[in-house]
Length: 94
Image (cartoon, rainbow, N blue to C red; front, side, top):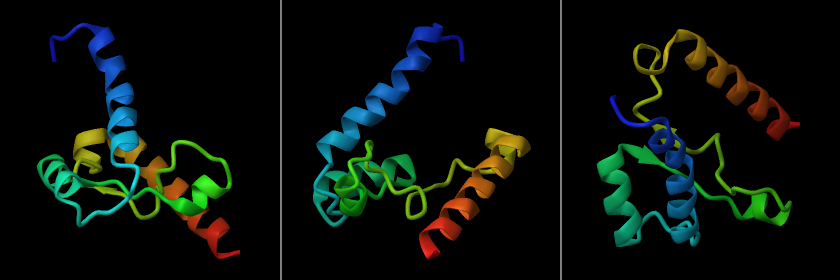
């Protein structure tokens, strides 16, 4: 990881660009299916979130990534994401 810090900051913008491109949220479409297969990630966009005017429209409860493991992101970050998912699930159920 000897890239400049600016390169790392562009990752979020790249993801946002991809999300906008795949905004129709059809996981059976050839383009997202091929792209997500290479990334080992599934990003689910929610029309319900759009209806609430919340952007980006990514549903964190249904989206998955094989990179979200304690040995990759660290134990603290992993536990934080799991707690956030639990809180969101409780809020969604009530």
